[in-house]
Image (tube, rainbow, N blue to C red; front, side, top):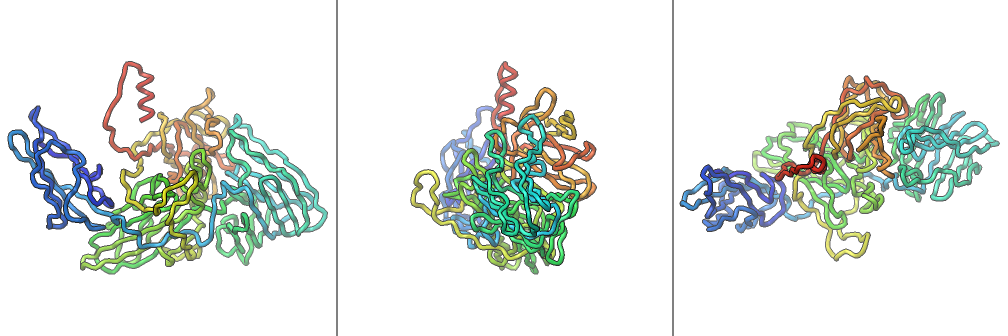
Length: 617
């Protein structure tokens, strides 16, 4: 008789479990038909010490047998074996399986950290103010930008201001348009502006003179992505030049960005020097509240026995050691009711640490926490992304060290992921990639965020209970299958449609080549029209669009990690420009799931039902 598939808490050799009495399961395979288990014995050890011996128990049970030994210690590795007896009295003993405890419901001895200033989701901000001083004969201020093909342009000339809505209108038969919303005359010279927008009105002042006081911005349409929110901002100075000496973006007196152009996020809009930003024949946009990037540099001078990283976030997070992701997970820490609890994950990072200089870093996305969450809107659980972590290092000499999130960590928002939302998509600018170990002026001191203690009610009343950080109790989401995309057609012109062959949920792996600064737009659909063009009207107000901006390497690869898409067809086009098909090397569909084993099959006489069941799986 063979004993196999040994699991603790339904996981194989898990690390970081919080159960005080974990449950053990196993399966049996017998060469002789009809042979069954009649008794079992479980022995659990810590190093060479036995912490539980169940003794021989007369039972055929092999599922969810609860530990009943000494109290388990936190952050400790245990091993276990099971022996079973058959009806003939023959004894069989398994190989050794492991499990490792997590924090065991102890609090993280660490701070929640994030941006040094208060932030919000600009995709849900409909009340904002932008002010700047500038020098230009034709300033092109861009607001409400989803991408470089969908935005509102305030074209400020010498004697007039024209306001346009620019849209590729992929949600309306791919008819592009540039719609004039209004023209307003100016009588005096000006070099400063203040644009205020709320739900019902637009106010534009030039040198303190009121130029616009009207309700002119486009309205939200039920079957198109949100139009009236701040989203990204920027400057369209194609065939023109502008010098900006100060720029401030705020909402309800909350300053989202303020830059005198020394080295802040807004400096990414152009070239800067002597306190001025110069934009010459360029069009750039940035999100005022992009992803949160954090790091902690440290030294290791002794031999390491083991190292574990315990991490979680309000929002999605990717954690790295020395620039490499600590796992191939997606969408950690998983979706829970964040008012009550958030899961943390445990990673074995022993082999990722090096002698001498090291760095632990993290990138945070909005996720379900502050991003759009189903039909409920954005910022349902909170407004700001934050991160918490403990790196526990045990050295071979018996000593240990803990590196935790605190005020010594550094922060930057001048980084590749400029925007991300689980439903709306991710924007990645490879030009802003960085070496997390290097000295870099973009890094500043991080902010300490409030510790969540009591749940904050949203709908209805919650019980009077403390907020909890709990260990992950299931598999994390990973890539489970790769579908190779095949080119379908070019329709409309310069829009290239690929078919991954299967309706699926996940992301893509896009390989491209091109010039630094070229930008690519990626849309997803479950169907196409008869002419091969992609169908996305069923997406309603979800943009479901990724953006990738090239840095100019020979081959570049993009996998969005903070967005999820349901699709079979992928449309690749230029973001504010035209691209050629030879830029696209390959397009693969990556199915993502936390279910790694299929335990049952279904088949019937109807091939369509079989296909439906296959699609669902």
